[in-house]
Length: 482
Image (cartoon, rainbow, N blue to C red):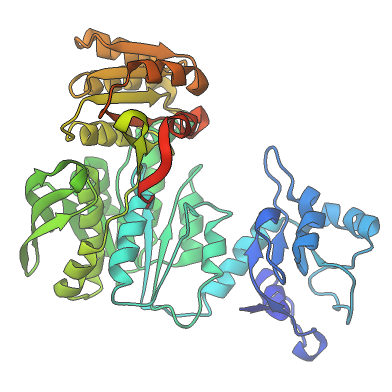
């Protein structure tokens, strides 16, 4: 739990404070969204491209925020409008104040990051895991956390808290009870993962894949690989770099780290390897595991070959921490949640809801999963965003993939037309298109038959969850989201 004096030390360590002159105040939580503020919280007013957190300081105060980090340029106007007290780090703290205490800083985001880095350094967990990659970060984070928490008290990122503004919120939850912390690390631009690693101080780094997910912004796959490698370069000599042996760009990162390297995957060179793989549809996958001192048959109840790789990464992390195989094996048996959500749909259909996001690699994994089911297969696929100059070719290739496994394709969105073209050119005949998710609902309903399995996937901006909501039969959730 943070105190007011901790916040002052964290955001402005260059100033000295007399603890006897700073009121004692327990801070219950740190929030950047006024809707998530709890009584006694610190609210950080971040300025985004379309939303300014300073417009929500009053809402945060009404929800119980007692302190707010605000930009110096906006602090006086807020204080004058609401009658609140404002203080600049290094100046005396008033003994009493009405409403939230406004702490004025040049940039609230930078202050939040400084506070998180300062707080992280107050503790010495045995292992801190950073996980990045173009695809599979969140699922791998959940698998790693499920395995290591069976042996160590573990802090993990909630949801997809993996950015420059949300990872600090996870670091600020660390306390003396945590022997392990697991951080998911995303990126928007070069240098961001290095910043996140500076805050979290990982000694284990996992890289899942390098793909074109951010190609529109980054410009090339090589630049994406360089940005992902920032995690591996941040590891200490005593650390462990855990790399996907099935991705050449990831394995090449072994030359960029001083840490010990452990490879996982299906490749014969993998240190933690799966072979003799037997897909069992939506019931999961069975495979033989080979790792140092381990030769065993594993049944993973989360289906899809991509989930096998995620599990191998988790096993590699657990082995690196010295967790006994018996403990890891027992924890694997309890992994039943999935990255997607499986619903019962109308007319006794099954709905695979993977509408959260989409990139070529994750689209291929979802299509491969659809190919393992025994029933008639319907793929409802939307645009993939941020692919830059490869977007037409990438969507066309998705169409070729889906033609090999699905009975019906409904391609949604402007870019979806390229998926449809790829499928038709591959010989698929039951191909339909729709301009958006709402329009697709009627098309899907007209094409599905009783007992079909329906995969729904697209980039977040496509709002494909609207289709899922319309097709659900009774709201019964067959399996929860990971």
